[in-house]
Length: 312
Image 1 (cartoon, rainbow, N blue to C red):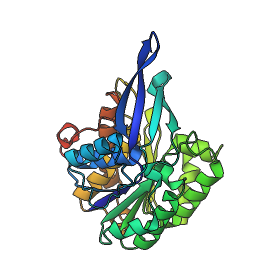
Image 2 (cartoon, helix red, strand yellow):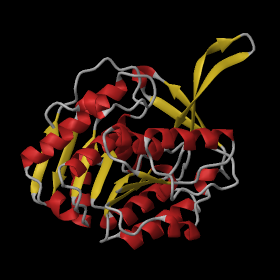
Image 3 (cartoon, one colour):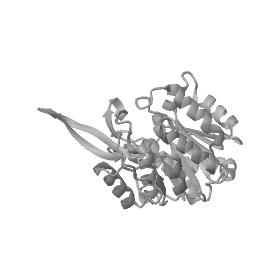
Image 4 (tube, rainbow, N blue to C red):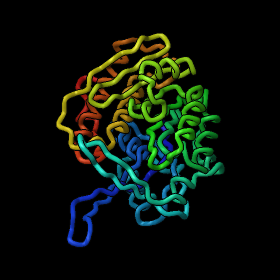
């Protein structure tokens, strides 16, 4: 099983002006939440390990996850409010995020909650701002420490400086994770935020030297770059698509990559290190097709396997 860890929240979109303000629409979201649903829609039944409030938003989040086939047996239900994030979609469909709420349910994950998480998980995915705010960040680091060497560890920093503005917190989190990560997915935008002037190829070298088995850098319309310690960087162009917005595109890519690797028996550290170029290109192409579909829709509307699959 794949266990997805982190936040579930509501994305709030502006649907236009009204005489007295704005018309808003609230949609279920959060990077790990999207990833869990993406995995379920792509044929993998994941578990979700994140705080889900008992308020009306939390109940909707839980019902949505369960309705998509995500297992919630290890998700605690703290007595805290659900986080709300406004999504301001700018030029080119690129979103800007503003978080409302700090003492919220996704942050309330604590060390005793780790007893809920099965130790025999095939893979543990962590990332996003839950790796940069407490107490949840410390809890997830303890989980990674416990599972390192038992489960494949996947990591997507998904940097949100509007939520955690201290870059050092993010760079410390990445530095801590690199030696413990088997599969790292990061965007070129994240690299630019955290390491100004560092190009993706240089970051890939740093990550591989730290011990990461597979490093994947997504670059939006410029495609994707990926490498292992034994395989020179492989580059794939992005698919052409009429972009509505890019909300959830990175989450879709990661879900599709993990599902493809799982379906082909490659979701282990040894298998990632042994990937050849054709196998890696196939995985990246599948993930790229899935992400392109999400970009053609509003919000994080993740595709289903039958929409993405050709002969994969």
